[in-house]
Structures are given as C-alpha cells and as structure tokens.
Image (cartoon, rainbow, N blue to C red; front, side, top):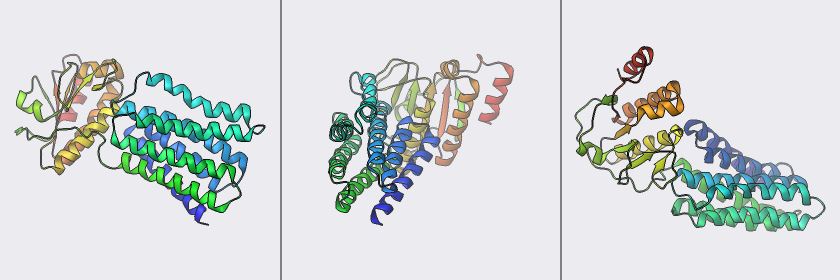
Length: 319
C-alpha cells in the first residue's frame, strides 16, 4: 500500500512537470515528466518485465532531460549534443539483452541512470548537481530492487529513491529561478507598464534590465540572440526560453522591490526566424506578465519592416 502511494506521488509529479512544460515549452520538463511517469508504472504493475522496461525508458528520458536542462541554463558541457545518443543505450540493452541476460540488462539500465546523474555533477549549477545526486541515489536503490524484486523492503527503498528524485526535480524546476546570477538595480524608468517601443534605451535603464540583443554584450542580465552556441547566448527560435527567463526575472525583481524592465533588441530578427504570429503571441504573454509584476517590456527599433496589418496588430498590443 505504501509503494502504491509512492506511485501516485510520482504520477502527481509527472502531471505538475508536464503542465509546467506546456506553460514554458521547456523540453527538459517534458523529458523529466516522462521519466517520472515511466518510473511510476512498476509500482502499480509488479512484473519484472515491466520493471525493466520502466528503467530503460526512464534512463533514456533522464539523459535527454539532463542534457536539455544544462543547455537551457546556458551551461552545457563540451560535445553535449553527442551525449544525446547515450539515451539509446538503455533502450538497446532492453531490446537486445532482455530477457535472455537479465543481470547484464539490469546493470546497463541502472548504469545508464547513474551515468545521467554523473553528467550533471560536472555542470556548473548547484541545482542541477542536486538533481544528478538524486539520480545516483535512485540508481543504487533500483539495483537492489532489481536483484531482490520480490522483497517489499527493496521495493520500498526504490520507491523512496524515486520519490526523492521527483521531489528535487520539482523543487528545482517549479521553484525559484535557476538563473542565480541576475542583478537587480532600480532603472527609475518613468514610463507606463506593459509593452512599448523605443528607438533607443538610456544606458542607465539597460544597466538594470534583462536584455536580449542581436549585439553581444557583457553583464549577468545580457543575452545574445544568435544561433551560435555559447554560455550567454539564446537561439532566436527559442522564444519559450526567453519567456521563461523574462517571467522569472520580473517576478524576482518585484520581490526585491525593483521595477522589472525587459529589453528586446532584435524584433525583426525574431520575426524572420519564427514568423509574425508566434512572436506576437510571445509578446502578448510578456506584456501580460509585465502588467502583473508592474514592469515594462521595451522593443528597441521601429516597425517599418512590418506590413500594414501587422503594424496595426502590434500597435494594438502596445495599446
């Protein structure tokens, strides 16, 4: 009965993370949620084959989730893209070795989970290292249950390990911002809240703002919009990441008593890469959060590159 309760807890974690994924479109959350869903299954269906399949899919999703999470934090390890192929190892072990070689299969599956955890131990983020540590703990408890599948105590230890991992993932990704190095200074900007367009922004405002720009710059609050991978770069097509960062920045600025300002310098480039409607939806959400937190989103430049209908929709959005 206790193990059943842990299974339900894992399903709740799956729902929360998947809901968060739909809100932010961060793929790491989708992968983590699917990994927890896979882990929940054997607590409802006690079968060795189901358990092995659960570990295989969970390991694959954890690899993808960890790599994606590090990339979203702009702290990927070298050759991170190649590490994605390791997600295929547990699935290959399940397909080609199970059930003929159960012991070897088990070591491959739990070893893959442990490898995913070790990957995060080398990422320069304390939050992700916590996630990696819990994955290592779970891999050890999963090993015990694999060898003592009929033991209630072994199942309980695996359930505790899985629950601990789910709790830490929720704490890291549903709680405070992972971007720990934001700086918050009062911009003293005397303009309305919401969304507006300016031909240029005073340097004093930029110093305290979260800035996404086509021009590379220095500072903890400045990010370069580019397809070039880097520690403080963001892809022009990853509007979800920019939105997530901006929302967390505005919320934390409000908590500190600072008026949040978000500056976007490169609107034409964003529309070129994503299309007008996706960017308009992105700006609509940003505007709503700016009103919620008493902040301002500034678009740098003009709207001369838009046609008449698009210009009208953008001006209507800015009020």
